[in-house]
Image 1 (spheres, each protein chain N blue to C red):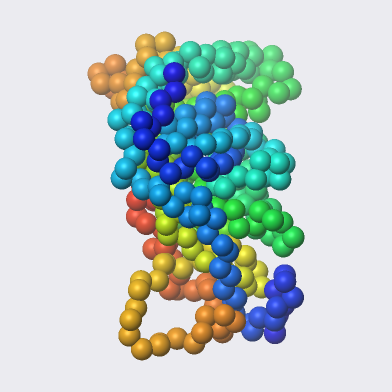
Image 2 (tube, rainbow over the protein chains, first blue to last red):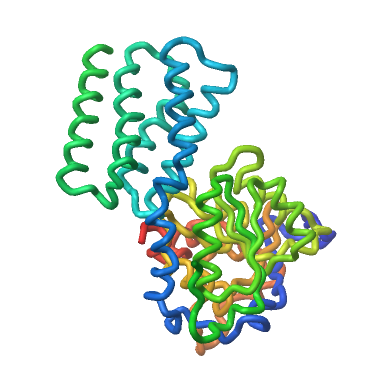
Length: 168
Length: 192
C-alpha cells in the first residue's frame, strides 16, 4: 500500500476522488458563453491590433540591435539570450494580434536561437533575412497572411533557407 | 478604450490572474477578460511572481502561459498542485500555449491543468474555457504520484445498473489506455 500526501493509504494503482467546492459556480453560475456579445469583444481588441506595430516597436528595435551586434561579432553578454527571448515573444503573441506572418517568421528565429545556432556563419544571411522580414511586415502593417506582399516575403525567406542549406 | 459588455455576463464577481512574460499578451488577455465582464484582473510575469500573486490576490481562475523565463507554466502548475498545505491547490488553471503537440498536452495534463487555450487567442475560445470551468468542473484525483483534475474523459450520465466499484480508493489506476487526449475536447487541440 502506498500513502498519499494526506496520509491516506492507496492500493497500488489506486486513487482517491476529491470534490472541491465549485466556487466558480457560486460566483459566476449565470455566465454562458453564448450570451457574450462577441462583436463588442472584437471591437475592444481592434485598438490592440491597430496599435500592435507601435506596441512592439521597442522589441523590434531591440531584436535588430542584438542581431547587429551578434553578426558583427560585438555581442554583449546578454544579446544571445535577449535575441531568443524576443523571437520567442513574437512567435507566441503576433498571431493573437492579427499578425500571423510575424509569428511564422519569428518561429524560425526562435528555433535557430534555441539550437544555439544564431552565431553560425552559414546562417548569417538566413537570420538577417528573417529579422528584416519582421521589420518589413510591421512597418508595412501586413496583417493576416499579407496577400501578395506576404507571399513575396515568404518566398524570399524560402530562397534564403535554400541558400543556407546549399552552403551547409 | 476598453469595451465592456452592455449587459452583466455573470463574471463580474470573478478575480482572474494572468501569467505571461509578454506584456502584450498580458494586455491582450486583460482586455478580453475585461470585455467578458470579469471584475478583477491581476497579472504576473512568471511562475514565481504568480505564486506570490496567488496568496495576495486569491484569484478564482489562473491563465498561465507555457513558455516563460524563470518559472514556466508547467513548473508553476506543479508547484500549485503539489503543495498539500496550499489553500490554492484547487484553483482552476488554464494553460495558454502555442504548442498543441500531443506530448505537450500530455505533460500539462499530467501536471494538473484544467483547460487548454491555444494561441492565437480569441474571445470565443476564452469564453468557452471559462464556461467549461464554471459549468463542467472535474473532480480532483489523488494518486501516489498525482494530484489534480481527473484526467479521464468526462463521464456521461449513465442510468443503468452499477458497473464499477465505488470510485474512492478503487484499485483501477487513473492512468491507462482509456485515459487519453480524448478528455480534452477536439477544439482545444486546434487553433481557433
